[in-house]
Each structure stands twice: as structure tokens, then as C-alpha cells.
Image 1 (cartoon, rainbow, N blue to C red):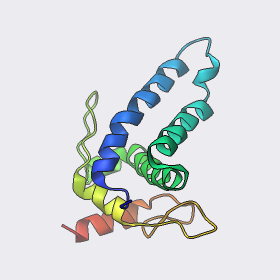
Image 2: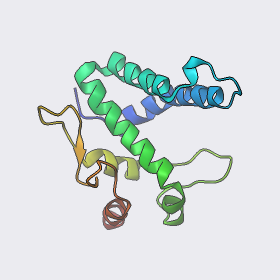
Image 3: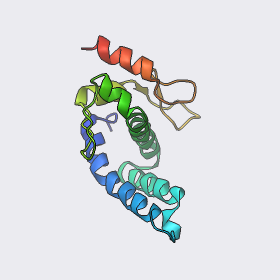
Image 4: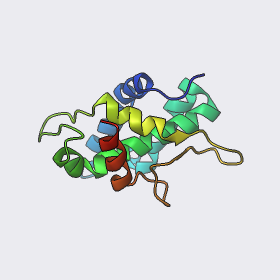
Length: 141
């Protein structure tokens, strides 16, 4: 199976976003059902990736996907100010394929005994470092 690609990311995004939106809607209720717990949303995503890609690749690809999603959500304002994404209130954030490719191509496959991928653009907490991403994105243009 090839490495995790932009096309795969977009397909997974379309399948995972309804799970996250459902969780966020449940989270807003005054009396929260058990399904509103964050671990349920996370487990739904884990299961979706495991079913689609198998246990080994599922963990690898899920970590890549969530790492990118977390980076974009956390740095949305900075990414938009620096022209790396298009974000407007009330509209979907537009992430160019060039940025997704940069982030996806920065990953190295997991090396046993680890089941998790690493990235040259990660910090010591295994999260994307904004300065590293910005520098790499601007140098690639």
C-alpha cells in the first residue's frame, strides 16, 4: 500500500468530519449522553481508519491525519495571515494541496517498536512546529 496521499486525506476528511460534527453537536446538549465523551469521538475515528486500512496502516494514517487536522485548527489564524490557507468566518477553511503535500511528505513511516509516524517538521511533542512548516512552505514556492 502506498504512503498516505492527499487524495486519501481528502477522502478521509469527508468521512471523518461528520463524526466530529456529530460529537460537537452532542457536546452542546445540556444533558450529555455517553456518546458525547471525547474518547468516543476519538475511538470512532480510530475504528474508521482501522476498518479502512487495517490495524498497522490504520494507526499510522490516523496519526498523520489527526496531526495535520490539529495543526490546521490550532494555527488557523496564523496560517491565514501568512497566506498558507484561506479561512473566513462561517466558511470552510481552504487548505491548498501544496500545504497538505508538504505536511504529508514530511512524515517518516513508523520504526518498530513504535506504531506512530514521525515528521521532520514536528517539535519534541510530536506536533507540527509552525516556524518549521512556514519556512519549508515558503522555500518550496
